[in-house]
Length: 270
Image (cartoon, rainbow, N blue to C red; front, side, top):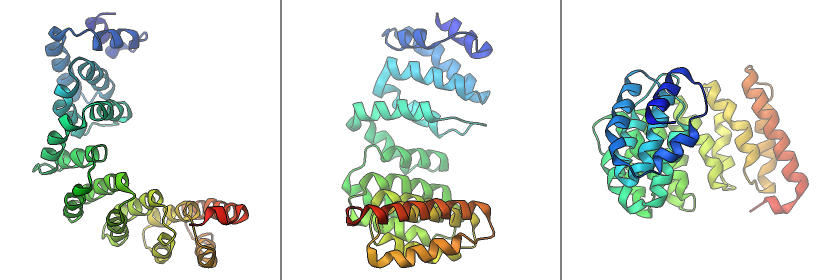
């Protein structure tokens, strides 16, 4: 399958393009770069995330780190019905192969004036994180845009051993944005701190259903000291009679996890 045939595949979805894609990406044929980039721009304009992904794969293989700034900018561009899993994986592969080469691009995106670029930079920073980046993340957590604040939480989990990162995620439990509070609840799982549950209990009265619905499984997932299990159980039982089915379902799963952990004994505690 030639490049033109890959283009036809994107239009028709006939056949398996991957053998040809792998061959094109590994070919070292830089004459492919201009038509692939042109097709990439066309697919972006058409909101064709599948075609975008295939072109991104070829560019990542042909140019590696040199393609990273363009591909991170592509990642930042929202498309209708987007599925970015493959694109995330290919960007991650480039960053893992050459973290020093990619880091300047990531830092430049974080200070960009455009929200989507900043968000992409903060997402990518999670793969290149250094302890000194905590100051950058702390500043970004005060951004007026809740989408940026949520992106920060993902990167903070990359340094889950840093107490400062844990405390920043805790602070986001009080964020004025509902979805940011939900994100903070979910990201606390990464830190596995026995004290986390004490910060989550007040959120059983959170007015946002999507915040309350995240509490059950997070509480059930965390290591909890035996002295705190009665309070955690009482909180989950209160959620079990919540008016919202999603909240009740999460609470039920959390209770199951909590009881299973209790039955397994002290090995679950820290």
